Image 1: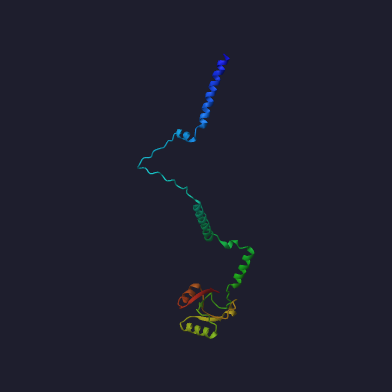
Image 2: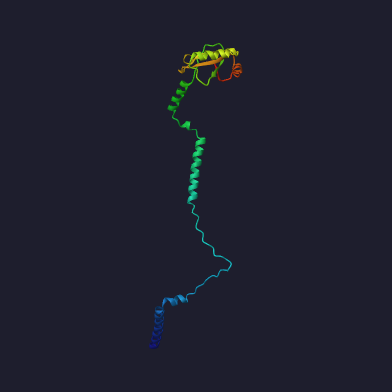
Length: 188
């Protein structure tokens, strides 16, 4: 009994080996033919879709960054008071310089206001100042002139002509409007 079973097992084993050998001997082109190819048919009036490239957003990022920087500079320029960043010791010096450069007049006049006439050309000689005063007196103005270094803190060697003195700024302004020149009203 054992011989028949062993013979049968041997025969089955030989068949299997033959099948394996046959598969190894078969060329690959035959195997490829056995594989099934499935194609999806497209309708005739439908065109195949083109593949889109992904959107390169690096230029958009750069534009946003440049725009943000430009807006920041604009905002800073229009809304920030850069004078607040000046150190306090520098502010004291500039305040003192402004105070020293501010024009101060020294008059012994009876009245409260005068109007100094601004001429286009500086009057550097006393004769021109006297001539201008005489013209104004002929027109009915109460006027005079002074030498700037003697009556102010400035050292410019010029003469200035003024009308007045008058009791209040309203009266001074009323007379000064009749002048055919620019003027500055000064409170004494």
